[in-house]
Amino acid sequence: MKPLLSALCLGLIPLAAFAQDDGTLIVHDGYARAANPRSGAAFMVVENRGSGACMLSTVTSDAAERVELHTHREEGGVMKMVKADPIRIPAGGRHELARGGDHVMLMGLKQPLGDGDTVALTLDFGPCGKVQTTLPVDNKRMPAQGAVAH
Ligand SMILES: [Cu+2]
Figure 1: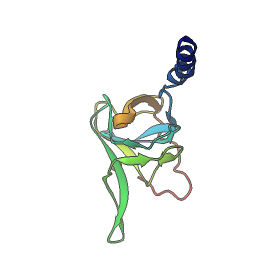
Figure 2: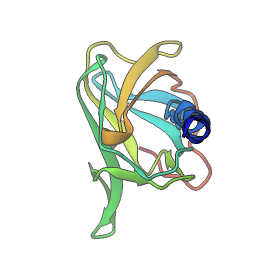
Figure 3: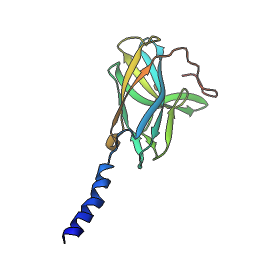
């Protein structure tokens, strides 16, 4: 009886020790830019290194009165900016928020976004948790090739 119990314990403890889910959602290559003194947008790459899909549902920031996930959609031959549905990032996948595509919209900026400023964002992935990131403001950065202007 005793040897069997110790074998079970030895087998279970290492599993529990590895049950961590920090650092599975990575934000990189992010920056924010002004559209005008009252609004701006943030762009970044979100990587899911976890073992399950995660949904980016909302983004919050103290820098603006309202923060929304936006995307561009073609309507009647015109590219329009509309509110985006939650963005699903599969396990091992990545999602790019880029100019002309999905982006974080900052509306009602408390201060205009100047080069060298930073914007702190909280990305809410629902059951996958929240990720905080601080992005530099870069108004001079050019859109990636093929992307349309905001
Ligand atoms: Cu927008």
